[in-house]
Length: 196
Ligand code: AMP
Image (cartoon, rainbow, N blue to C red):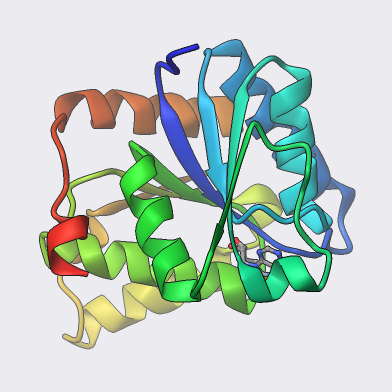
C-alpha cells in the first residue's frame, strides 16, 4: 500500500485523566485509516500513543513506529507496527519522524509531546521543512498554552508569522483535513537530512 498521506502524531505516553483524550486519539486513528493514510509516531504502546496506533491499524491504516533502542530495552515498543524502526538515539528518531511525515499533529500529552511539537515548529520557522503543524486542542487542553503564546506575540518575542505556522482545532477530522490540504499546497521534500 502506498499511503496517500503520512501524518506524524505526537501524544502522551499516558492516557490522561479525561476519557475525551482517548476518544480523540481513536478518532485520529480512524481518520488515518479511512483516508488510506499512514501514522508515523514514537512507536510506544502505552497511553494515547498505543491508542492512536491501535485505532489506525483497526481502521486499515499503516503504522510506522520509530523508537530509540533505550526504550525498546524497557519493553515499551509496539510490536503491532507495520514498520518498527529501532534507532540509536532520540535525535535520530526525531529526524526520521520528521522525514517520514507530510504533516505533524500534537494531541494531548506531557513534556515529551511539548518538546516534539516545539522542535518541529522551530524547524519549520528555520526553513528546515515546510510541512504543516497542528495542535488538536481536545477539551481545551491547550487553551492555556495558546493563551501564553499569544502573550509572547504581544510582548514582542514571537511574530504573527511564526504563530501562523501552526494551526489548532478541537475537531479531529476537520483539523486533519486542513493539515492534509495544506500539505498538498506545500508539496516537495525537506532539508532535514541535510541540516540535522
Ligand atoms: P509524553 O508526552 O511526555 O508522555 O511523551 C510522549 C512523546 O515522547 C511521544 O510523542 C513519544 O515520541 C515520546 N515518548 C515518550 N515516552 C515514550 C515511550 N514510552 N515510548 C515511546 N515514545 C515515547
